[in-house]
Amino acid sequence: MEFMYRWPAEKERLEARLAARRGLFDRKTLEGVLDLFDDVKRRGDAAVLDATLKFDGVALGRLTLDDAHVTHCISALSPSLREAVDTAIRHVREVNLALLPESREFGIRPGTVVGERAVPLDAVGIWIPSRKGPLLSTAIMLVTAARAAGVGTVVVGMPPRPDGLADPATAAAAKLAGADRIVVGNGVAVIAAFACGTASIPETDGVFGPGPGGIAAAMFAAMMRGKRSAPGIGPSDCAVLADESADPALAARDLANEAEHGPDSSAVLVTTSAALAERTAESLRRIIAESEPPRRGYLEAVFGPSGRGAIVIASDLDRACAFLNDYAPEHLMIVCEPETEREALKRIRHAGEILLGPDTPFSAANYGIGITAVLPTNRFARAYSGVTARDMMKVSTIGRLNEDALRGIAPVIREFARCEGLSAHQAAADIRLRRKDLRP
Image (cartoon, rainbow, N blue to C red; front, side, top):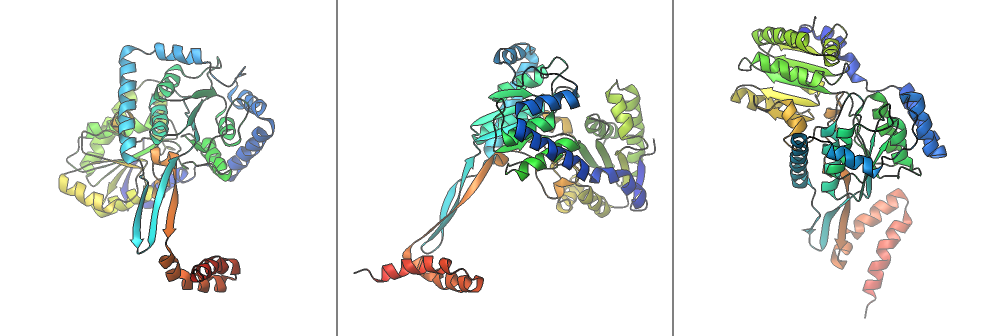
């Protein structure tokens, strides 16, 4: 397993290894997604059912899960798992409520009031890609965020199992978090239904959720239809920035934490310590050898010859941070001496989340802290943020002028209106001022 590189000495080799991570989906994928959106718009439920049979190999009798079945899924949770779900929902809700935008108005100049009014979306559709196994955490993160924002209707979509039902634990978590309805079907088709509306799946104002390239392309297609979304939430990726103070066995576990999501995951250790790099690589090899299928196969793929996993030995901290800013990880963990941590935080600008210290593993953020783990991947963290309740809301700007304030900016209105050739703009202001001037 040749996955160790020196940076920047082996820059070209490392960039070639990670090149696949720079492309989330291609033009052909997007064109296929748009065709399916058109089909769902035209044929509704029938198109979703046909797509599910064609792409998922499952013949569905209906798209909506029965309430009694969802109730059974909840009752089937073990007491310890139910307690964990309730705790996670509470923590995610606490964090999202703390992050909500506030409506406000304030006087910025004499006679001029400005502000913002924040309101929740009326309805959101949430996609949970639970095909590889339960994804309770993602369901909790997104549904709870929507409820904290005050969204009116929350519909959750999931891929069907061979029996036509959803993963029971994920369905239970979604309902406990506040989902109004749970539907099953092909991912792209269900997202298209969220964007267009069908007899079984209501049209929503926002569509959110992670997934591979096709799902990411579907989120873009939903945005093209005026839906709020969070692009670039694809295959999981992470980076660990560590110095010689870090424990190599823990660093290896943290890399495996994200790599075990799937063969298209990316997991990178960046360090200035060659000794830490070597010991981490040794620990990682042992972890892979001891892992059970199918996760062992995922780890072997990520750290194999064609994988997106790597251990990077940087020549100094500046170059380590420059690499990380370009890599822009979904999840970043910094495990360094306090002074090095402070310096790294000054330099690192691009990461979906930043976890600090040896006692803050990725799994704690994924499951228990309450901060979002639905984060931008594939370098999208250079421009986008993780999904929280703020994404389930929109803001209207507010402005109010009194007569003196309008009179004060009237020359600005006139000059711009003349320059842009928009005479009605000038007239709208002038008529108000003339009427005020004619008052007895």
